[in-house]
Image 1 (cartoon, helix red, strand yellow):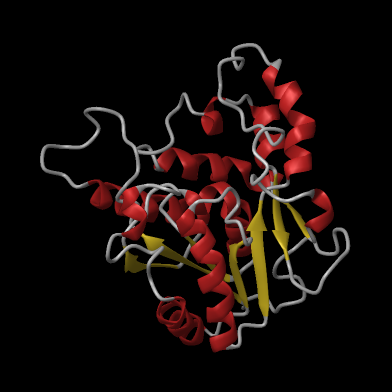
Image 2 (tube, rainbow, N blue to C red; image 1 turned 90 degrees about the horizontal axis):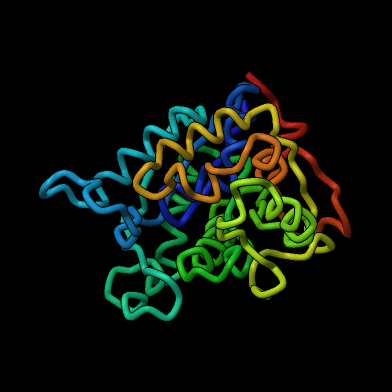
Length: 267
């Protein structure tokens, strides 16, 4: 049995970018470990969602465990940093935020888990964190350094395929009932994702989309039924989320891998 550790910035990030590979690995008999840097304290929530006196972080931690169970995760760990908010917000530089954490210190926390699990594979994010969020960028920095410290042999940087998204964006915009959705537009967001030419791994996760969507729904404080993620009809959801994209340093050019745990022993 191999061990896949997947490292994310906030609750709900895990199911969006890696939900399919997590469920796939679990169903194939591998151990899946989820590590989250923060508890998502600065997420935006609908009015009236929380019970009186209930802190947001508590709800988001509970949602993470519920989503993890759906995705077949064997262990969930939080590193204990505070959500830094979006890039440029005053919260970025507050003491205790993940963005202000010394990379070496945070990497050692993650490396301790990697060593304890004898991790074979680690996922983190690309160098822009997918779309420029400070905590996502820090996941990239901390993840790569932790893998070095622990000697984790395979490191995959989860990313967004901006060319794939651009190809499908027009078609999604023409789907009845979706015209008012705020669909990501790579043409106006130069720091959103990576060009297809830079991506080396494409994992087909369409057999696991039911689990991926259920995991998204488990994060009800952040992903509403009216959101881009859940309002898409099945075909459009499969196009947008049926492939999970990664970059592995030293591989390529082009897609050279289609499975993060290929060749590793199963249970």
